[in-house]
Image (cartoon, rainbow, N blue to C red; front, side, top):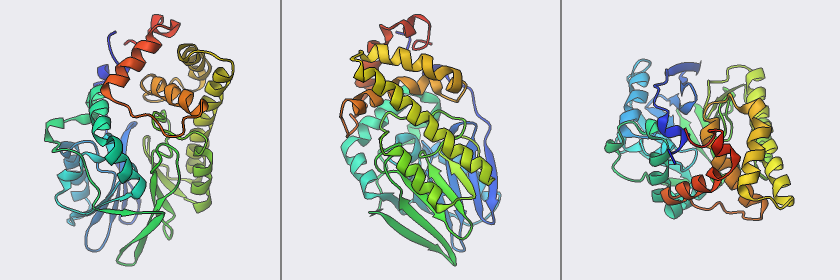
Length: 326
């Protein structure tokens, strides 16, 4: 086995720093994980910290081009290492997360860190700068509000989708939403820890907020209502199509490898051009298979399980055609 498709993905991405409104910015990188920036009168809130302190330094360099205020708070949209391990690079500042997100860090944070770094090294540039797991200093249940002067930023545990702890940051006056990986745009949703059955209701809750601009977890900033609607619709179509196809295979009694091959053939014509499609799909199908068989709580991905899953799927025809080995 030659390894994950992502281990050979080493091409640097071009970063964009787009203004969403006065003091509101999207840090995006051609399908790599995004961050959000909210400038308040006394400091800056960053939504998602990036993967390493070294990568967080680039976010701060972009912030320095628009304000001399320092980062004073971090909000985590969920627990994945690629989103949270850069937090220490901002100094000793409060780190906010949903209670469920903290519970998941307790349960699987170290395993997730080891797994993610192993399977996608480019996303952890400067990994030697990571001091360890990122721990929230403040947690909340359903929602809390940050008041940045007169600016209101609602931090909402929006529902289960990409993970069980998914959190968005909503600015009701400006109608801007930082959505985390509940929404993607032109990038394949990673569903290895997902809750497929709940995802449509979570997207419905986002639609009900009525965002006019939205920063997805991956992909460019969505700056019009039409783009926001498309991002929501595309994310729902991808996740619902994938789960329905996998569930159909489970109902037929097919093995995981057969279901993987069938789902790839079914989805590639529409979604194969999306960023990280080849990387995500083995994890996505594996989780969908588990959920379709009744496993509500996602199994923990360890570096060992990653390899075990890869080898199991490798025996299918997909491996022969080069879809698993790269």
